[in-house]
Image (cartoon, rainbow, N blue to C red):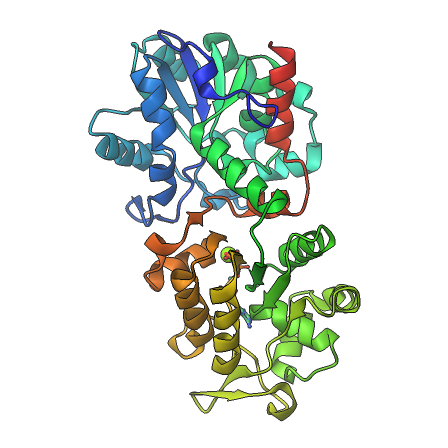
Length: 416
Ligand code: ADP
Ligand code: MG
């Protein structure tokens, strides 16, 4: 038991049917079904290997394609192929989630076998729209098709999908109502790293917050400053632009329009409050980069052209951030410092990411684009921990109890 949740070593799984929810949702080429990254698939291998070697009949539940746009969904068949290659053994696949074909395939499993079911989001009750509109309780989720058809075939439910732990959906929160449940090894590890970061960071602890997911960044900033987790917050990306605007500084009409167009105006008020409460802890860029006549230019806010769009932090600011990162004992990063996809506006991100690779401090990175930047700047092996979770990580850092954590804790109490 850890964090009030069972771990997989507590259960004898020999000959038992184990339903394991994983998160292997990855960017995919929809033309030919090629996965553009397999990092999440690799990350869940330890749990699968452990359970299978201990003789479990393993049934994997997963989704592919995100959220609200139904057209994003894709079969998990390619994932089964990748799993087979990575494990050097056959991982079965069935193009069904909880219908008669899937149930028959589950009943035919032998000890140690692994079977991946098709995309759980092909069931409407697994979709985010369904989640947002119906807001089913966990007890109600246990009545859905996915849970009511599959749970009777299983002895244990394992959740290893930390990256989806902020979702309140039946395949994540419903099985815990009716089956003994445990978290998988990846879930355990991510939970452990992040709670250590929140409860006991080595100091100085620096948060680097950039990117474009403003509401997440502000929620996180508020929490880590309020709880005194962060000693310093270095800002970049759109987060910094909004902070600068709140501080009464110039960011150019292009940036202001961008903020307005994306509905972020209200965050300027939030930013003002944060700056008033924590003036010593939040660091804003003193130089900014923009494009003029196709060239990268840099200037302090008061010297920006009136119509500028700020697309990166200036290199002087980036070097200042790099010094702070190199002196830190803990660094958490979410969100790039600029539009790093464009070579002309990548310098800020590159300089900061090089510092992350070099610092002696403990480094943790989360967020899809931040991980892409980490690979782009060859820092992957030099970052101490790369979280597979984006949304879940941020909500955890914002101090919320994640729905899946709540569900797993419930099961630990209900099935002693
Ligand atoms: P992550 O995926 O790491 O959580 P986000 O999704 O929040 O990060 O932000 C990444 C995106 O932010 C990138 O696509 C990047 O181009 C964009 N971005 C960074 N800086 C700016 C900026 N100044 N203006 C507009 N977009 C930006
Ligand atoms: Mg992103």
